[in-house]
Each structure stands twice: as C-alpha cells, then as structure tokens.
Amino acid sequence: MLIIKNLETINLNIEVTNVIVDFKQQKFNADVIAKLCDVLKNCINMKQLSLNLYQNQIEDKCLTSLGPLFEQCTKIKSLFLDLSCNSISEKAQQDLHLYLTKLTNLKEINLNLDYNNIINLQPASSLINVLAKNPNLENLSLSVCGNDHYYHNLYEEIAKTEDTNIKILSLRFNNICFTPSFTSQIDSAFQNYKNLVDLTLNLGNEKNEFSAQINQIGSYGALTLARSLQNLINLQTLILNLKLNQINDGVKHLGDALKKLVNLKKLQLQLEDNQIENGVANLWHGLQELTNLQYLFIDLRYRSSVFWVTKMLEFIISKVTFGRLIKFDFSWDEQSEYDY
Image 1 (tube, one colour):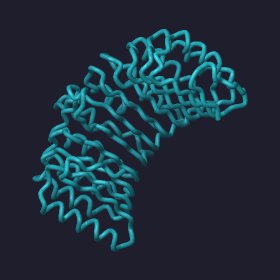
Image 2: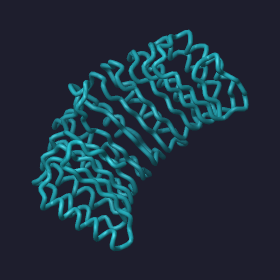
Image 3: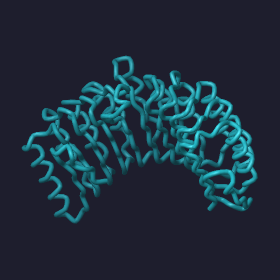
Image 4: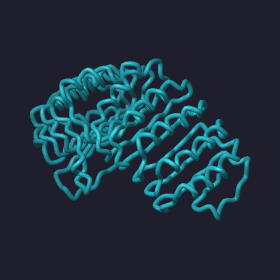
C-alpha cells in the first residue's frame, strides 16, 4: 500500500496495487494535481485508488489530468474520488464522465461532488446511467449534496439504466421537491436494478449552516418513494434516511412497501423529527412481515406516541425471543447520540 500526503513523500513502486492519496484541505492547484497524476499513471498494476481532494482549489483544468491517469491505469477495480467543496463546472463533469468510462474493470466506485455550486447536474446524472451499464460494476456510491439544483433528472437517469449488475447502490442528495410531474420518474427508478441487494438512500436534512438547501419529501414524496422501493424484492439491506422531511402520515406507505421486501436482513430507518403518529401503525404492521430480519435500527425521536413506541418494543422482544439479533434505538432526548 502506498499512502501519499504530499508530493515530497512519494516512494514510487510501479508494482503497488493500492494507493491512497490524502490531499484534503491542502488548497493545491492544477499544477500539483498534474504532477500527482503523472506519478500515479506509472502504477500500471494499481487496482485500488483513493483520491481525497476535498476542499482544494480543484477547477476544470485540474480534472484534465485524470484522463491520462485512467487511460494508463485500466486495471483499477476500486475507486474512491472525493471532489467535494471545490469549483467543478458542468464542463468538468462531462470530462470526468468520459474519463471514468475508461475504467472498464471497475467493480466499485465512490464519487463525492458535494458543495461545488453546480447548477446543472445532468452530466453527473448521466454518469449513473453509463457506469451502471459497466458489466463489472457492482458497487456504486454517489453524493451530490449542497449544489443549487433540484435533482429530478437523477431519478430519470436511474430509470434509464438497463440490465445493470449493480448489487450495492448508495445515493445521497438534497434539495429534492417531490411534485406530481416527478412521480413517474420515482415510480420506475429502480425497475431495472433486479440484482440490487443493498440500497442506501440518504435524503435526510440536518440543522447546520447549509440547512437552506433541504429536501422537501413530504407525505406525497413518501408515497412515491414507497412505490419505487416495493419492487426491490431481492433487497437484503435497506438504509433510508428521511430525517426532518415532514413525511407525516406518509410513513404508512413505507410500511406497505416494507412488508413486500421479504428478504430483508438489515433495516435502518431514520425518521426522527417527522410527525408520524398517524402512520406508524402501518409501519409496525409492515415490520411484522419481515421474518428474515436480523438487524433493525429505527429512530422515531421527538414525534412518536408512547403507545406505538411500546408496540415497536414488543416487536423487538419477539424477534430476540426467536434468537435473532435486533438493534433498536429510540429516544426523546435531543442530546442522545446515535448508536450506529
């Protein structure tokens, strides 16, 4: 393994297969990135590459160096690329799209484009479609939070994907407003992801300096999301974060969807700060249908009645009785820490 924190510490070995570059918060410019890529492209046997370029001075010119690197190092199977908190334009996204398609042996990719002031995210949306067509790709993770854009086309591009072999999919984005015109895209979003066994959808909102860019899922959004999820019958792991989304009684639709996911073994639901009293009964009934469940993390903080919390605890106790490991988290205390 080769770990690089600055260009002076590089001890190059062309036989190295695992390279970790930690350049976060260094404010490096295009010249430094170009030198880095010139060095790395000699590692022709590299199979794992982690590039952490968080909060540098990455602009369009910087990303052009990735092209020759990916052309030369085609054996890469696992790629972690953090470009968050930089200044990447639409044109740079298109270039990145082209560069990544050269990695035909890629099995796993984690791409972070958070907080780049991106207005048009169409290239990143199309990237999902193109990467998903790679027959070797099994694990795709994309984060595009903090960009001034409603990500409707993300779901549209997901729906376009055909015959994908992706088994693990993780999506994190904000600033989504569910509208009637958006419904058809959501309903068909995952219809071609028949091999999916692990899905993470992080649509939660946080109370921080970026809170102006929040999701607006609502009850209607919970309904359309449930329709999209209920057909993923091969799912074994589902992580769904809907914190602070005003889904209210829309939680009942999630309960209807969950009971159809009969192969679920791990379920994590973050529903805190939603007024879900009127729909939590359906959620409880949906959970009862999950006979294969081995791990449950559920957060109902601040907005759940004692009655339904008691029902949830009864459900947990019944599972433990049958020898299954169940993890449950509930608290009304704002100071409580999550137990992951």
